[in-house]
Image 1 (tube, rainbow, N blue to C red):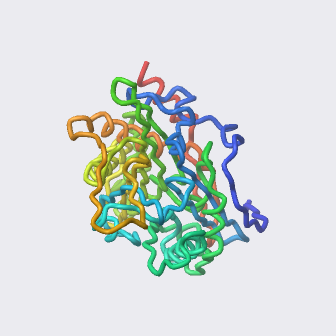
Image 2 (tube, rainbow, N blue to C red):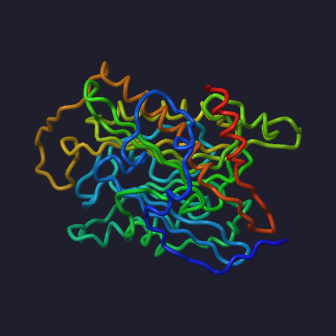
Image 3 (cartoon, rainbow, N blue to C red):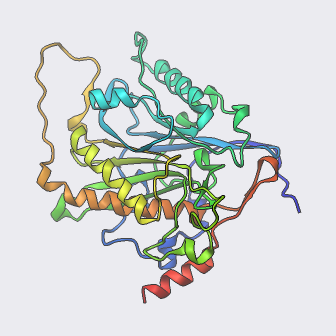
Length: 374
């Protein structure tokens, strides 16, 4: 029977209600050796905010926006160190070259669908220009990433507006982060199952600095799904090349936040490790996949003020290369768990042209994985 969707355009703020559905860790699935933060979310990194706008309308529109803010102040005036790594470049990430050139982030990070990148740019720019203190700003490097939700969503309709992007930014909050069919993950598909937004974090022990590393993902890619080392995709009969007509293309946006004092060079090294976390889930970064990682540090001592006197030398304290290994491990573990969290939170959805994407059969997966680890 065809699913009926009432018209709904809503700003979905973060709330504790999302935890009414158990996450894989709560169901006994293990992920690595490091402990997660209190929320097991990117917002465990102090100051980081996340906002979603989810747009579900009629039978055809299944899309949205997710905004990630590195801190609650004026990001343009108080830039943070940042880096971007391209795992596979079949995608549309706006703002990448300036981040690579200057090593700083000056806008919220916006995630949406492929054909709404322009709206994402305009929304992020208009938000930045509207902030007190930015009255004379004439250039903004908006960072906007995407995945293609065109299987479930009328992507050609370009239903996201700049105003809705601004709403996602303005409603960003600290605290629990909604996962699954929300924001930029509303219409996505991952490993042949319903994908979405997922997040996870790691808190390093004090002996390793006590830093927090958080990851948020927008999952819309393919491969042979593995959960905690168990080849779930093969067991469920959904994996690449079992049928010559099947494809495993798609994309994954990965955002890493940390409070560790890390500059752009080592942030890029952290970003590279996120692809190892993706690989642990069975992702293969296929030819048609846009896999991008954006990493930033919220460390106040490393921020770059927009307004500063000329010819002033900068000085800062930051981690040595030899102290980066634990952060690398944290990124790998948190990325893997965030991807699996997106699958567990996502629900079956019907969309454009009657296309139906089912949710991952969680009960079977939990049974196989827990049995494998006994």
